[in-house]
Image 1 (spheres, rainbow, N blue to C red):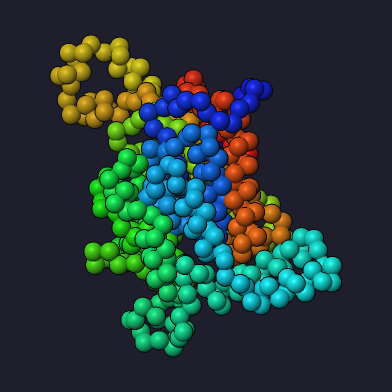
Image 2: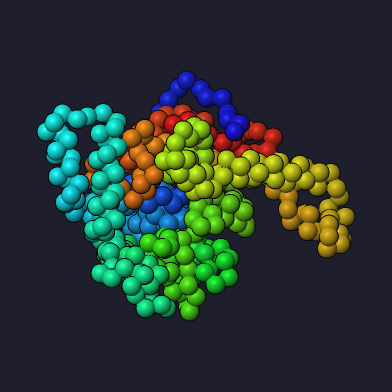
Amino acid sequence: MAERRLSKSKTHRAKERPPFERIALLLQGGGALGSYQAGVYQALAEANLHPDWVAGISVGAINSALIAGNPPEKRVDALRAFWETITTAPMGISSMFSSMLDSVGFKGDFAHGLINQTHAFATMMEGVPGFFNPRPVPPFLSPAGSVEAVSFYDVGPLKATLERLADFDRINAGPMRFSVGAVNVRTGNFEYFDSATYTICPEHVMASGALPPGFPATVIDGEYYWDGGLVSNTPLQWVLDNQPRKDTLAFQVDLWSARGDIPGDLIGLELRQKDIRFSSRTRAATDQFKKQQRLRRALGHLLKLVPKQALQDADPEIKLLIDQADERVYNIVQLIYRAKNYEGTSKDYEFSRATMEEHWNTGYHDAVRTLRHPEVLQRPDTLDGVATFDLA
């Protein structure tokens, strides 16, 4: 990815709003990794970088609702309340196993990995407080056609948590635009529930995170919806392509890294495959947008050479081209979580408090380091009008 050259001067706290018409926060799906996004948002809030538009998929949709559903001074507290709620329950077997390893002095990445795997196993068996509970009867013993037959967990607790921590009247009233993506089970089509066109409720957020077979499809207006990550785990294109276009400073917070090592065993193979699938080719989408924007800007320059009367008298095909001309500018700032060596294939459902804090702190410090570079907040001067950053 092409990146702008960085100056040596550094700062974290923005003194005034950057020169962009819109600040967008784009949050990828990734389950338990989502506290990384909360840490990023804390750093953005401290820098007075409050988004005008927040869009998310899956756990990114939940974080988006907590941000859009609270006033600026309460958003970090709402995120903290959510992530502490879903990581408070004692982990039973996993706690015993952690204590045992500590007592014998077994430490290092291997021991850490074993502890994480045990926490993840406990999540599978016990569920997550305020989020989801295991069903008393497994799906294969439930009658076909019932919700119990198509999912392992009940997500009723999540609805109550969302209603407690997010004000949906505020989400629908603005001033922040809100978008979450989900997949229609019947048609297979990807759909965004956007506050510009929908009255948003908890079910729209839950639909975006209804990943089968763990969670049941969410029913909205008679249609069934699954997790948006099944089609695209990144809301970048939805925001960048939306009309009318505006000068945009976009913070793209990814929980899966498209880049990684060649796997050396079956566990590594599964992990690498998961990273690639859910990273949703963010870099490729950004590169494609840069090419499109360069063409739009070139068209805009060309139209300036055409007499105004000729443009007014143009036929519909020419007017279609005129509508595509665009000289807006975009900064796309990527913050990508890079998993530690001891995190395995269960990293997205390992809901221990210690790991949550680790992800949160990583997100916070990645964002702080990124914001120390003033170029991130300055309008780009490239031919395509797009600057991309991946600094952390």
